[in-house]
Image (tube, rainbow, N blue to C red; front, side, top):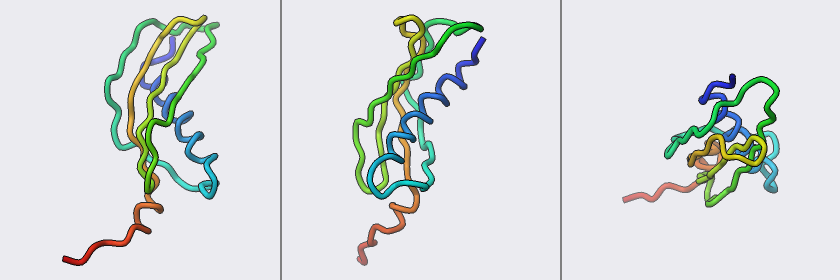
Length: 98
């Protein structure tokens, strides 16, 4: 069967691909910062085909909030909410001097 963490990893990579297809982000690095509300509903066994759907809920200044779900034969198998970051965009933000 497919371990749960590999299922979540697949969701995160699909969301990262969404970020990398935005204008100006080609070839940059994306990191996971947190994963929340992880749910595993059904086992994925050999022969099953995992369909992945992700959504970019928020993206600003290199920080994104995403959600994703995995389906086998149109039945929910896993879902999660996660935050991702693109570090080179964060370093470009000017810091305020107090």
